[in-house]
Each structure stands twice: as structure tokens, then as C-alpha cells.
Image (cartoon, rainbow, N blue to C red; front, side, top):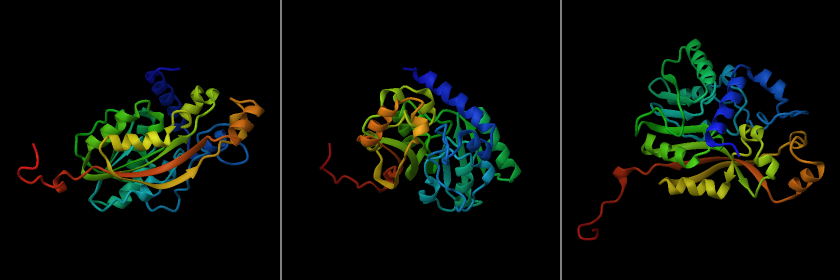
Length: 282
């Protein structure tokens, strides 16, 4: 198996290549979710076009949900987008947060940061900024964000526990997140688990749904809720690159499920925590 750093380097390389394409080129080369689907990068994406603040040039079709639709962003909020890509979720968050809000996108791929900054500059968005960095060690001070969003990114990070710790650190007390991500129920075939392309395509880096939810709880979050869930079906022409026809049939008839979930959770408001009456605590 590749090391964590090798996985990160592979993801950075692949998403640097994708950043140089627009959505149409990317879907044409990957065939999107249409009649052919020779690569896995676009098969999970949802339609953003009806959301206020949508910018087509910032949409590379790489998500697996619509976290900004569920994020309960209010005017004046500070919002952080983890794995911000070309800026699509940031620009929708900006519409929700308004002129008095602030949006920070974090991405570790220089080509994506460059593309996002250009997209913000040409639109005159002076309350949106993009920072290059690793979401396992965010370039943000503690207690900064009212809301954190992320779209199909945590499955690409080897140290998911570290990311949730960082989310907790960076959120203000009483703040919350809405994250769309890929999770599993059951186990992927070995050839898919070990395929670098399937890792970069957000499949083989996914963990069990129960383990994912337990990680969130273990890091101190409360009011954990699944806001949306949908099954992800990998087309046979993708699977055939890793599995025989017999293995594909067994996989599709088995108990393994691949799901996109959008999860909401809150960082407890320390100021609202009940006080301990005199004499009841040590």
C-alpha cells in the first residue's frame, strides 16, 4: 500500500491536471455520468445550477453532494470550505453570508488555488480568499469559523481523525459544519481498495459509515445529523478495469454499499454549558 505522503502526492497530481480543464473538458474526458464513464471523477456530482451564487466557471463537477445547500449559513458568517477546488462552494457560501460575511477556501493543490483566486478576482469578490494548505493542519487560527463546509474531500485524506480535530479547533463555540463525503457499508474488493485511481476518485479512501460517524462524535461534536444520503453506483466500464465480469457480478449482488452522505454537526457552545452547582463537582 502507498504511504500517506504518496497518496497525498498522487491526489495533488491528479487534481492539478483536473484544474487545467473546465467542467465540459473534464466531463468529456471522463464521460461524466452519461453513456460512457471511463473514469470515476464525475459520477457522484450533484447539480448546483439552481443554487444562488452558482458560478459555472468554478464548477468542475467533482463533488458528491450540495453541502452549502444544507449549511444554514447566515448573513455575516465566516465560512471555511475544505478542499475548495476552483471555488464553487465558496461562491455559493458568499451569496449566503453576504457582503458582511467572509469566506475562506483551503486547498493543497496550487493549480486549484490559482484557478479559484482568478475566479474570485474577475467577479470582484473581495470577501472571499483562498489559502493553500493541508486540511489536516489548517492555515487558520482557532475559533474562526461560524460554519465549515466540504464537498467530497475528507475521503481523500488518510488522517480523517486529524481533519475532524482541526475542524473542532477552527470552529467557534456554537459553530457547525455541513460536509458531503463518501462512506461505505461492507467492504470493497481488494483490487479496488488498492487502486490509486479509485483512491483519487473518492472511492477506495472512504471508510465505513459507522466509523465515520463515530469519529465525529469522538472529537466532541454534538447534534450529529445525516442531512442527505444517496447511493453511488459505479458503472461496469469503470469496474472492469479492476474486476473480472464474475467479480463485478458478485460485487453488485453483494452487501457492499457506497454512499454519499451530507453530515451536520455542532461544536458545543462552551458559554451555554450548564454550570456545576457548588459541592457537586470535584
